[in-house]
Length: 138
Image (cartoon, rainbow, N blue to C red):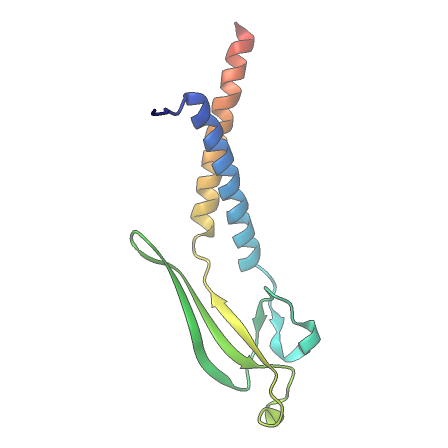
């Protein structure tokens, strides 16, 4: 038994998927535009998952992991993970190491995802609203 999508299903799918894409784009936009915290001013108890940090790191062990997400036309998002030493002055790095890792991520897709989400939401909403306004006018 085959089921076909009705025009009504397509309208609601456009609206729901568009809203989901808008939320995703807004979330990534917020993450990309977080104000970075200077790594020299962070204590180990201040560390939170998802923090954006900047500054000079006294020692760097190099990239220990890399994630690449591919789309049809090539890599879309790269993430690099580094093991770093923190809360410790550079002259004491060798004697006390508190190891954390940082993730260097490039969120390049937030703009197109947000724009597509806005367009899909608008088209779905207009189609749904126009259906009800036509019914009212009859």
